[in-house]
Length: 589
Image 1 (cartoon, rainbow, N blue to C red):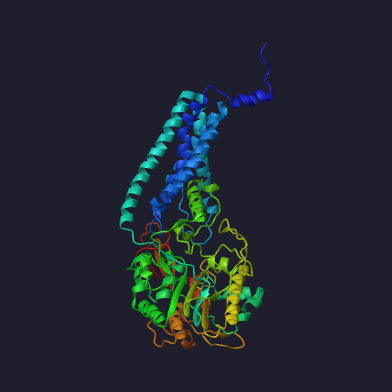
Image 2: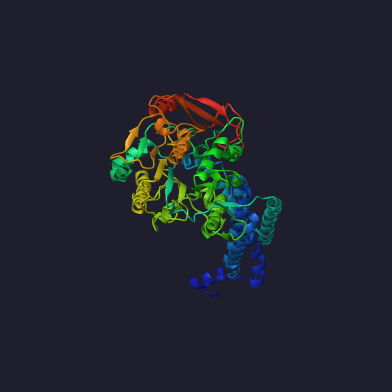
């Protein structure tokens, strides 16, 4: 009479089989290695190699850490699949093999073009058909090892071994070629540079010029914030606000470089990265930074290096806080984890890709010196914990880049960080636009209050501006904010001027006026611009099917809008499509 099987005996049978532990271990080697190799070794190193022009480290420099992480994952996967026997053992190896194959195919062939990842919302609903097809392919791939095992255990063993070996060998061969090329690049690689945050909260003991650039902020944003949080502008009574300011470019690049150098980009004849390097050696830039230096000003700039120059070496005589990092660099654990997360994101099916935000700077400074600026939110972090104080320099020019109303929103109305991590996606924010903008103005107001306590307010010039206004909607306010307080300027309430200025034409002259330098190469100080001005122009990236596509970019032309009035006229030109099309030689985005 057959022994009746109990529930416990049935469960035990799932974990027992004829293969010894040694055989299970040998069979699990390939699938465990293929899975960990793809996600945690090939993936991050391949991304680092591909991004070599945008990051400050070499793929070879992080190879030991990547190998260590992969080894730990490999050992965990190996033991998890080897310790149990029977059907569980076979099931896990089938899962490993299916995932390895699916990850490889997704990363190499199945990922769609998600467009320009510049803070605008990805059109996920428009990808629904691709998502369904992609998931169907995944289901077939994941099911394949189980089907093979169902029909033939011998064929399944060969499938598991050969598939794993093929995936590892193919990726290892590709990676070896890239690392050899990386070694050649490293031999001629220039010195790595970084922006030191050591003096981020240090002021000059005599004179200061402080610039707060708030990304994507328009006059309508200020109005919406002031309606909800009117107290945030009370401390700004000594400022003059220009409500009809124009920007030459509706994106941070090249707007920011144009602002800091006075040099415009000839997009039709000059590659963007050549422009970003050469602009710093223009006559305007040389004159501007020479004047600051001769007047005894340290020039500390806190922003993304990748948005300033393709070769940071060109900034050596421009920024005081630019330092070399040839030795003594340490791995930034948070940045390394984000690189691993980005690698995993690459291999996930479209429908299961997690919503998360990652900026270039999040991984570009993966290896940093101890005093390096590693996050563009660092000023916010530190102002919540520390106070400004005078440093060793008598005079300091400080330029701070802040997120402004650029998504995600992650601080409250008093500048307090709501979460230590970035929001999980551009569709979801931890805060609201008005709260975030109020938070930045609260921090700027706190800086002003501290200057007054230190007795430095009257000798300090302050500029609050945006590189561009909103660029997401056709009817949005495209004009940036521009607010100026000259040293010694004082009045009971904020002055409002409607003079038609352009920020790139007025910024350098305004700063030079603050240090007592007359005569400007790049334009006219904002206070001298008459209320009746000439025609102005602003340009926005776009795609035009009439022109050849640019490799790797979602745009291929600039649309130039010309107007003589105010922001309403600019919006009208945008909505009606009154623009001049300028083909680009290449694109940053």
